Image 1 (tube, helix red, strand yellow):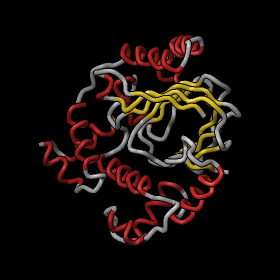
Image 2 (cartoon, rainbow, N blue to C red):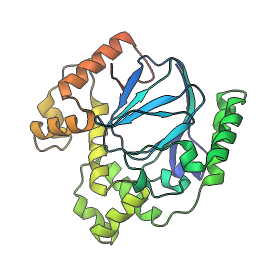
Image 3 (cartoon, rainbow, N blue to C red):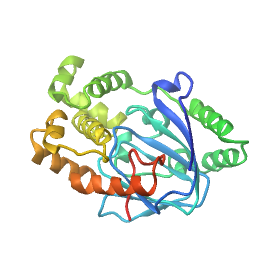
Length: 279
């Protein structure tokens, strides 16, 4: 697969980690994305893909793309044989500055680009992207679209600062201390987080801690699960295992087994660091 990524220009870089272009044949028809501490947007330029948010949900088809705010459970993507898209990886607080609704309304409820921005805007953007000269021009077009849609968000400074504190500790933080340090009540802080990020500070901290732990795993090496759990700030190995199953639907050893098989079959693949096959 071809993957091109770049950081957007200011002031978008305060809200967005990167813009990306993806094209090619996915290694698996279905891929599972564990919960991460951030939202993302995909503008689809190929056949529709399907998303299932949560193990008990029905998969839904997305033709023009989707917006996903900070998820609390794993998301399963069903890809066409060949995929082509551009997208945005937002910082935890970033997506709400481009949406007409609070992020909390979209928690674990992916919406289409049409639902977020309207049909005419969705169609026009996809048409311009589809006729662009290549990935660089496509990312420039997406960047311009985002610049035009960026809006001021009440409480953004508070949520951005507190989120950065959570990120700096990789989620190992006393949540009650965050509101004290910010000089606001815990209720006010939680409300702002839900509006702007879609989840509470506690849930965001859990996502950061789990993401840091998952990305630290090297499936090619022997893993001492007890040491890993302690180093990541979990109470004990049982707590770690429970959190792992809640976030991925797998036990830690099952997860590593899937990753080992993926690496054997697709060494160096762009998706091997986070997404997991679900076959």
